[in-house]
Image (tube, rainbow, N blue to C red; front, top):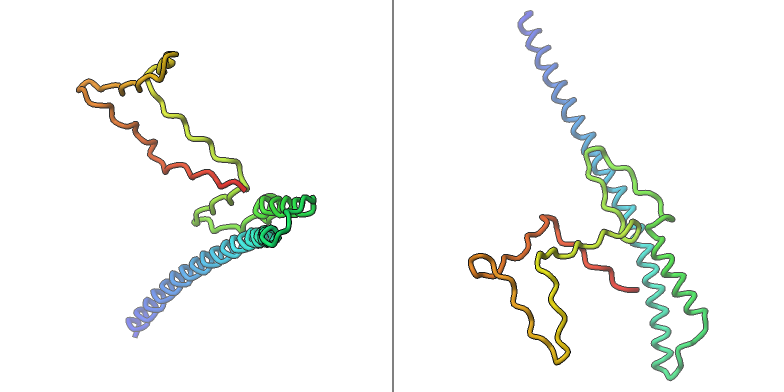
Length: 176
């Protein structure tokens, strides 16, 4: 009888540990998915703000184009220019100082990338280093032929400079 009782206690204990492990895993998964949902809602809100600014700018441009196409002149008044500047300023602050901070992330989740336009500009790419002296100025009589590339010890042109190992810098944003 005691043997049955001991095996029953052992099975119950193993089941309890299994249930605790599964419950803990489900709790972590729930927290992770909740963090993703909050982060997604924040990003969608920021995108919605930007989209509304773009829509306002587009309607302003459409009105101006329609006016010009129908024989009108582009109004020289400050009202349209002020509206355009106002929507541009809203666009720059939509994700900047005026926006709420992003929701907190779980401790094991990577931090979200900084919003575009809200942080400092990335540092400029370093200029290509070259050990060759600068080319001499062209003579006054006409254009000089381009200088020959420096040759390596084997007579072949030198290999291209090695990359820094990181991804290439992002292209500059288009002008507004």
